Amino acid sequence: MFSPLDFAPNQAGAIFSVTNTVANLSGFLAPQITGHLLNMDNSIGQWQISFWISAMVYIPGFILFQIWGTDQLQAWN
Image (cartoon, rainbow, N blue to C red; front, side, top):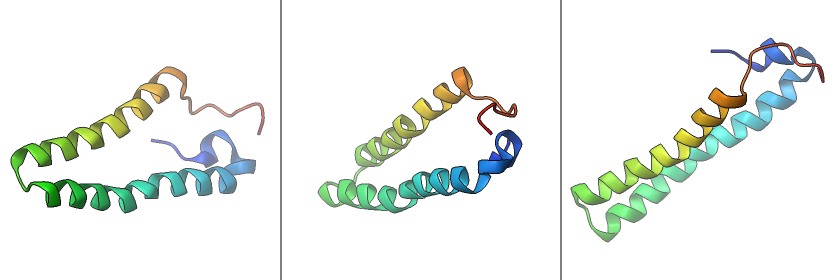
């Protein structure tokens, strides 16, 4: 695990603020979406849909980081 200080110390504040904002959107949207799904039909199937939505949000970010992510100091720093 690394932080913006590892790869861009001069830009760490700006990078952290953007990534933190995007990351916290899930904390706001997940209960809204899950509540909507469960209001339609409170069943195991609706819970499964909720977890699949969560997986579909996180998996692309994981794959993109595995392909292009690095913890090396960046030239644009």
